[in-house]
Image (tube, rainbow, N blue to C red):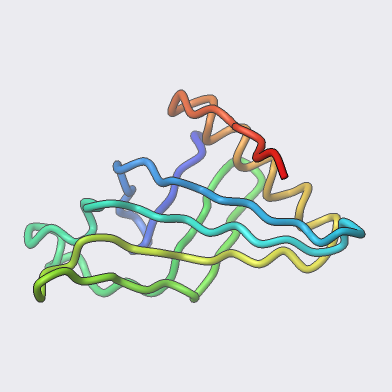
Length: 116
């Protein structure tokens, strides 16, 4: 099974997101912020598929999900979707990172560490 992201179950999002990760100093919690610019889920042709119910990160291990999903509008038209996935334990951080490794491998994404 390939790693994929869906906003409506059964409808794969084809636009690749910009993902920003933060992690607490002690490593116990973390946040992933996804930004999809002009995602296909906002196309009129996909409106008939249903409503956005969350963001689902799906791979061979199962499903990670968040309901913290918001559309951003410019001049009254949807332009991007932002979603936040919160990891509340080192185990959930590790699980998320395994998903991202699979998703990145399939889609040719690279990880760039910020220098602070």
